[in-house]
Image (cartoon, rainbow, N blue to C red; front, top):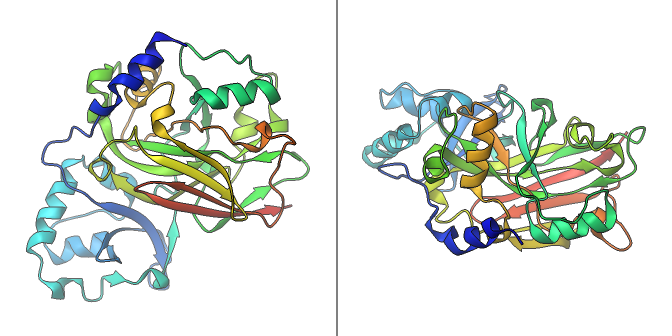
Length: 327
């Protein structure tokens, strides 16, 4: 077991959101009868408030999209919360909605670039992958990085497409996803959490029989293979991202149940490593890996079929629900 893994587990509690003047907010992207185009909202008193409309009412220009909000910097969340504290209740008339009135979209419906995926980042998943896939069983010495294109993104309560001409082995992977809030290159891990804007959930849908000579993008990157949501929570909503329960159910039966404390490479190490290879930018997304319990690792193996309902849950964020559709 690498020394780094032991050090990570011992020091995990010290990694917290580092933004000054911390404020909490649950953000989402939605459509409705009156908003047929995706709009940005936030949750207040169990209702959805339209972000752009709120800004107009309080004399503060606010954007219509999540990417635009993230590009404004994390301090915008503190400013919005300050306006909320002083806002009269009448301000919310006509700009807030029950959840039944809206349709949730992926928090970032169209990422600016590919999602960074991290493979084999939980020790037990390393072991089960070695039993059933073409991996060695050795713990990685550096993060294993792949990507999912923006077209793979879909929302909660949508269909994941299983193209039967391409795959008979569709699998699930619940993951905590990290959303970055500012640009950085060669970021030291001691400063890495300063770059985190917030968190969401990604189900890293994988077609196990579509890997090509060890390359994963066809397996991981097909359309609808990155369900995301249901919301994006700002980093201060999560006290410790390395102590979150995450689980997944198929048709109500639990398949995965673990905790982010078992990550091999934690968020600061991932950001440090990724930023040595790529310039990280606001809105970039890191899917941090999945624990044991995937279908490929079961005996006998289990695969998703048409009509299956998959529920991916992460504490503090919610549950992402999708149905499999075969074509």
